[in-house]
Amino acid sequence: MSLELEQKRVAILAADGFEQVELEKPMKALEEAGATVSIVSPKKGKIQGMNHADKGDQFDVDLPLEHANAEDFDALLIPGGLMNPDELRSTPAAVDFVRAFAQAGKPIAAICHAPWVLIEAGLVKGRRLTSWPAIQSDIKNAGGQWVDEEVVVDNGLVTSRKPADIPAFNAKVIEEFAEGRHAGMAAGARGF
Image 1 (tube, rainbow, N blue to C red):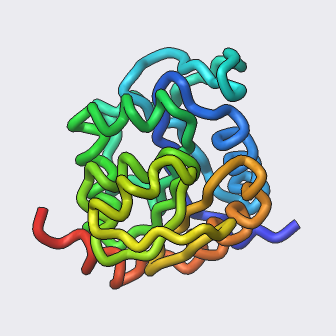
Image 2 (cartoon, rainbow, N blue to C red):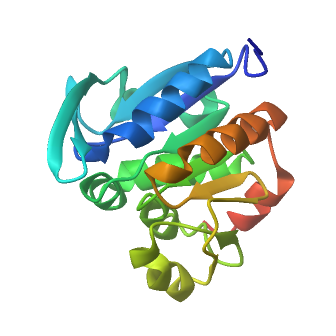
Image 3 (spheres, rainbow, N blue to C red):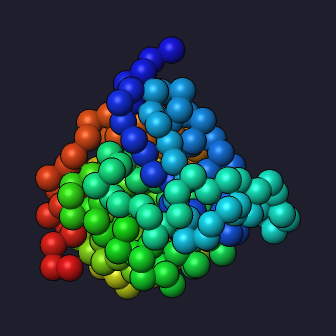
């Protein structure tokens, strides 16, 4: 077992309605690579996972967002689903949390509908990324270059489209998180 993320702390930002497999499988891969992973949420207690339109399992929140500080983490992962990123992009503290990672040049990974949160944080302009196909117009309208690929990396920003992309997503997430800070990530976050 390779421990390329040993000593790395990763925040997974999620709210009710996250696509369960998009949190569970990346979290397992990160932990197997040696990372310490914390689920951060605007909600305290437990958050509800989804298996598409059906309720999945509930997950314990390790750290309420109000007590979370991006400075305490090395990287950020945002799972998709439909409700989760919509809730996060509507929560100013969540948007600020994401923006703080980018401003510090820390790597960020987002899958499925999670780029909605990146759009709200002003982080997609001039970047190449992918997402669930239904939100490609949102990315383009925010100044991003949307591509239909299983995983896209742009200066520390890792994006994928859907659960079927998770193996490729996880591999690139571990690689980018192991690399650490990216000057290009911070450059894309200026102006906020």
